[in-house]
Image 1: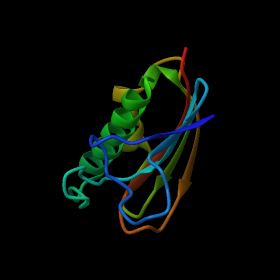
Image 2 (image 1 turned 60 degrees about the vertical axis):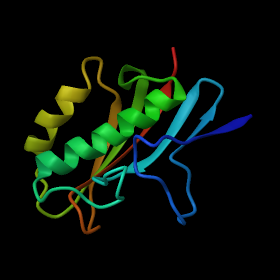
Image 3 (image 1 turned 180 degrees about the horizontal axis):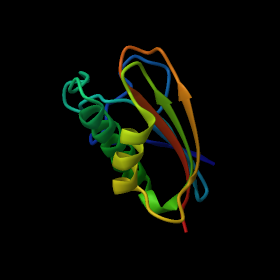
Length: 124
């Protein structure tokens, strides 16, 4: 059975046709999270550090609302926009994830902000 996960700790979908996350059994599928403040829905900061931290904090809040933790994440997809560099992003990412790191894909994207992250977690 599918369970929709919604938290006020991350940007709400509003009128957009998606859920913050879907939980099926002990698997959580988190939608792409960008650098958007939960309260306002507005993008934060002009730096990769500010935007990456906001996106990762949104991801963490959704995982916690589902009963998962960052350490439960098994797969991450990262889209890096214009102005975002791979190595500085990795330094920020390592503050949120530790070994054994999730499997990960990073791809470039033209989306008007620097980072978007989605994830799949297995609650253990």
